[in-house]
Structures are given as C-alpha cells and as structure tokens.
Amino acid sequence: MTSPVSATAGARSDGVTAARHLARWLALAATPTFAIMAVLTALISGGSADMLCAAGHGSLLGGMVPMYLLMSAFHSAAWLRLIAERRGKSSLRTPSA
Picture 1 (tube, rainbow, N blue to C red):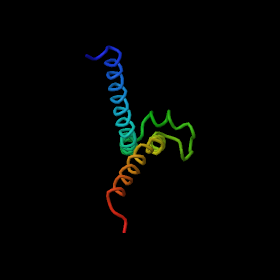
Picture 2: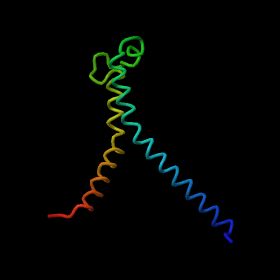
Picture 3: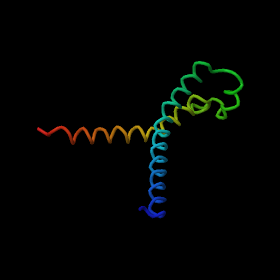
Picture 4: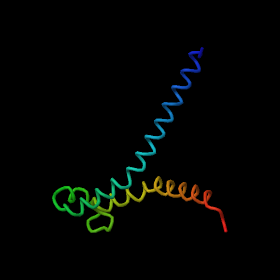
C-alpha cells in the first residue's frame, strides 16, 4: 500500500513536469507569434495605434513593427536551445569518421 505522503509527492512531481512542458511550449510559441504580429502590423499599418506607439518620432525603433521584431528576437532563445539539443542528439547518433 502506498502512503499518502508518497502519493502526494508523485502527484506534485507530475504537476511540475506538466508545468515545465507547458512553459516550454509557450516559450516556443512566443517567437513565431510575435513575428506574425510584426508582419500583420506592417501589412495593416497606419491608424491611431501607430501614432500612439511611435514615441521616438522618426526613431528607427519607434512603432509596433520594430517592437514585435525585437520581442521575437528576445524570445528566440527557446528555439536556439531546441536546435542545439537536436543537433547534440543527432551528433550522438552518427558515428564520427
């Protein structure tokens, strides 16, 4: 018979594992989401939203499109980590010459 303490610990570790998987998928979703938002904003640009967000008045980094591109770049670490992990696994599988 399983004691209540060990059953609770197992449920807690399952919850932590699930939360880590969810966080990893959310991190992977951020980069393409911001990139798509940048493209859509560039295509549909104009209007009062750009006027409000362009605090730089002529600055290269003013407006929503550069902001979304920067957010996409800052969130790309999850993708770079995934690529590095996959390359590491593939190098382990292939014998070196």
